[in-house]
Length: 271
Image (cartoon, rainbow, N blue to C red; front, side, top):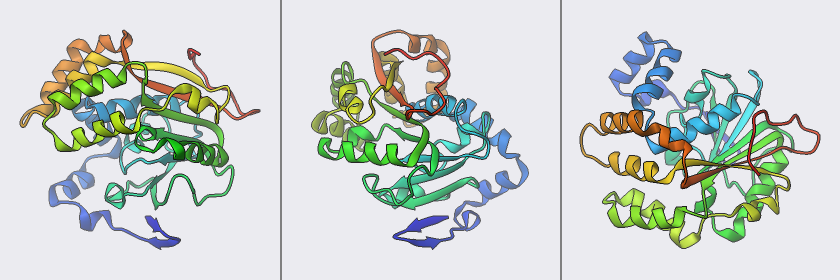
């Protein structure tokens, strides 16, 4: 289901899917497809950062809860939640091209994150995964205030680590030949990555954890630009060097905030 400007549009995933995809959906159970997607295809930078957030969401969202993903895409977060919980996911994005073929537990809304079309306290958890650094700095407080307004339990943000990401973004921009990745990286360099202090001014008392070894992140992003066997190359790379993700320098930061009186976030986070 896609909602645009207050109008609801039902989309048929069967009509949009290729024949092979329809056949696999018909004969392969959803949980098996999710496991395969994660094991065989889930070593890209995109899937790894979504998995980190999904692991945290799995500790917070009730099985029948609602989750808001601001600036996300269809089948980005929801396939990775099946092993934890099965919440209903509302994906909000201004770019309709990222909202095609919604999953069975997804609802898509074409809307501006700085003016969310939802009542206060609608969602248990709201997430924003590597989006804030593409939002101009003057608009970031409005987006964070809106996420705060519609959330009852936790706001989870995944952003580049402002302390180290600029150097590695410069390296990636120099080495990459993928125009899409270069455009995204240029956003980081021109707009600037958000700092924790900037976020804490809107979400006071938020907690921070540094994530993703920057050198391994760079290798994985470059490996996924290989014309052939990129999934195999990246999978072997992460299988052999995945332990580095626990070591600095860290490329990413996960920021979590709970409203006053909401249940606490389980697990240790560094300030």
